[in-house]
Structures are given as structure tokens and as C-alpha cells.
Image (tube, rainbow, N blue to C red; front, side, top):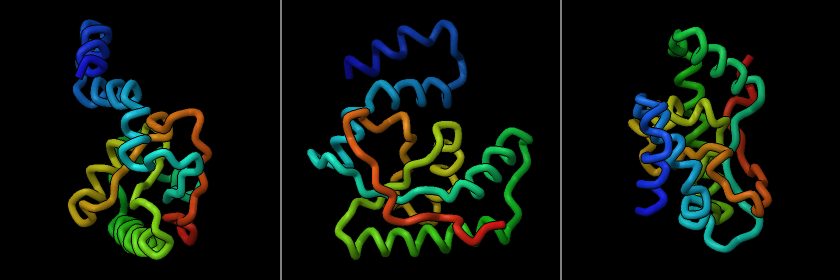
Length: 141
């Protein structure tokens, strides 16, 4: 709680947008977030986004446009497959994404896949090694 209050006090005067303040708090809580999802494991096994899909999503976010329904459905289907893979290997159902995409992906996937946690790469403790065991978007053009 102290970290949350200190982060809000430090940034509230400059930043009025709730989403951005939430992102700053989540970065400050990186150790707690990492510990919650991955425990003491030095190697994190998580789901990642394919680079080409990540580019498409960042462009869509910057332009203010939405996702075409086919792409959204493809992302959702591949997320389900990635969750199943994570279960098979005994790894947490966590998707690690580019920091700018976390709010978008979290809102989008939360409706249909509430068990999937979406975490920014900046919310992972530095001393952990990340191994992406599943990918979303490998067949997206």
C-alpha cells in the first residue's frame, strides 16, 4: 500500500489520466506482481505476442482505430490455445506484452478469458529470465 500511495503522490500532479497512473503504480509494484504470478522461480514461463502482431496492435493503438473482427477472433482463439499450453506445462496463464499494449490487451481479453493475466514487460523484476513458451499471433499477416 505504501508503494501505491508514494507512486500516486509522486506522479498525480503531473499525470491526470487514470490509465497512465495505474501503469506507473504497476511498474512500481513489479516485484510484487512478479512474485504473485511466478513465485521464486528464476525462469519465468509465459505467453508472448508475435512481433508482427505486436506491430499491428501498436499501430492500431496509435491511430486510434480498432481491430478488424477477424483479427480479434484470431487473437482470442490463439490466446485460448496458449492458455491450454500453459496448463499442460504447469506454467501460469500470464501474457507478457509491450508496456503500451497492456491496458488494451487486458481490456480486450478480460471479457472472454478472465483467467489470463496480462502483464507489461516493465512489471517483471529485472533479475528474472523470461522464456516465452507460447505465442499469440504467429500466423497473423
